[in-house]
Amino acid sequence: MDAHPCLVTPQTDSENGLLLFCGENEHGSGDFTSLALIHGKLHFRFNCGTGTAQIVSGSRVALDQWHSVVVGREGAIGWLRLDNDTPVTGHSQGDYNKITFRTPLYVGGSPNAYWLARTAGTNRGFQGCIQTLSINSRVTDMRPWPMGWALSGADVGESLNRSHWILIH
Image (cartoon, rainbow, N blue to C red; front, side, top):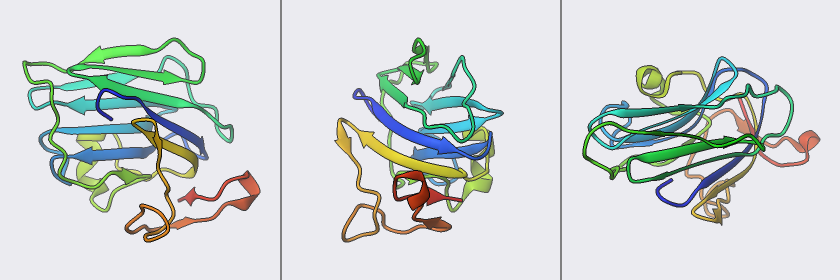
């Protein structure tokens, strides 16, 4: 999610859930970046090592509707844009401006979600569908490896009735 924006196109069935998480470790301590739904609003959080930025959407996410979400970060400054709303900006505290990523990018949850409640603001998995995930202007193929980039998953299936192929419970 560094410098270039990350685009996510979700349709949610719940007002709470983790959409994206990547960090220095899987327990949420240290550097990280996350995107989560908390009480119907999007929360983009990141920590460059000396303090967490928390950027919250001005609007609530409507259930059962497609949304366009763009998040990005350049140094300690980050931004979040929901649909056609004005982007919301924020910054992390301290002097550091880089993030060390050692975990995979988790989409829709994490095997250690319990530990992420404090860091990401929720320990619930995302419930709904994700149509598009684009990072650094590159669309991520979320099909299982070797056809796509997904190494493993849980409670993931196709959702043909929603005009796309991935459903996350």
